[in-house]
Length: 354
Image (cartoon, rainbow, N blue to C red; front, side):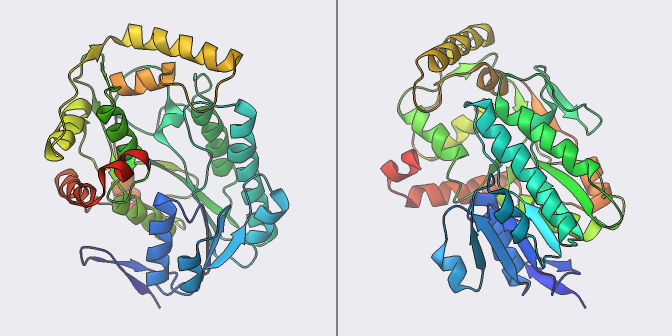
């Protein structure tokens, strides 16, 4: 028996796991919470592992395990009785101590893998990131044949690459594993990407880096959730043991999209520019300063951020279309229009500081 999965625009996606319990690590985050919502809509028992309980989810029947990813015993125990583990949680950011990222992203993932094996979990869906293939160059139409990075000026891609490699290596008949690489997840309710851009633009601290013509891929949060549910259904087939880029399939000129969003919100466009070389040099100085003093928070610029904002980063999703039946439902135009409406409803100060 299969269930249907209702979505915000009325489309339903079939699931063959209508009674299968699911664990979602990071289930109170932007992507994780949307995934939990959809699993609940399927009528499935859901457990969330996270650091901060969400009373609204618990009121809807979600079981909450309060733990961080570096609590190995709690992470392993949370896998007990699960049919699928969606490992969404991670330590994210462009700056920080490598050891902190390693504990959360690598050791936490190892605990998930061990817990799945100990408790007979059949499916592990790992939320990775396209930055695991960072190589410092333009990535235009890149596919999954690119090697995982071993040399990156940010600990996040490095540790996510290690974790992805170990997840895929753990694939077996007993435990089917897969890694999804959603790129720049966005949409109404996004507490990270768009609010940070708006805050910097409104403070006059945003600069076009490089030519301003670089193209990037993004993925609407509902499309990212679709991919997670689709790959769960495909794990008994070609998807097992593989990684997939997940995007909207509509690369945009990054700075045109940002300025279009600002214009729709009645904000002045970003016009000031800085070369990639200069931005990278500023980033190197900032990194050294933050490392030596050290200062709190993230530096205003890093070498990794300079490269991400100046270079092409768009990816082929043909493998996901072929193996998962993944078809992005929410277009860039539709999602952007919805985002503008949501942002206009928010007090200006709130949207800039989320």
